[in-house]
Length: 179
Image (cartoon, rainbow, N blue to C red; front, side):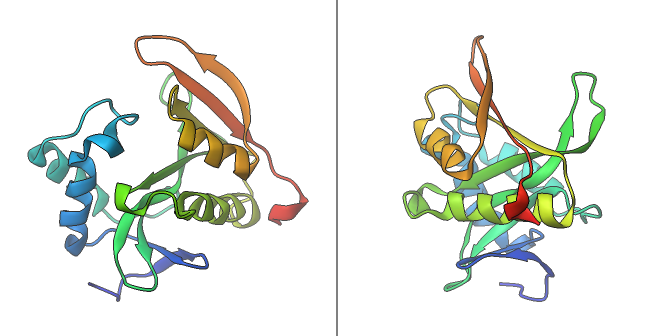
């Protein structure tokens, strides 16, 4: 594993850094896992699709708003990608002062509190360091485990979008605990 990559953020058990070529196999395994993809895109990606998507994650990140490789400190294992990334309006423009939260953890690491820990780290980072005004996220209806994580993190349900795939929309605004 390449440990020369700059660590963007750290929590008790996790490191967050730029993706490196050595992450490819674990990344693709997540993208091809039907359990992981059930509520994210509705289907597993093919190996070719996963590799193509992975290439984009290797591009240098300049503004600190991104989905970062999420690594278990104790073993150096790549366990997913988490972060806050630009929040876009309906026309594709970036909404200043806002970000979207993404928590994408490999199934082998579910149920251990890693998503909650990553979420706490990025909320503190977003409000404390980046001085964001709001963090939003969406969860597909039926993904009860992710809804529980967001509730633990203090997110508030703002809307339910009904369609072919239905989504809960959540938001979190800063409070004194994030400064």
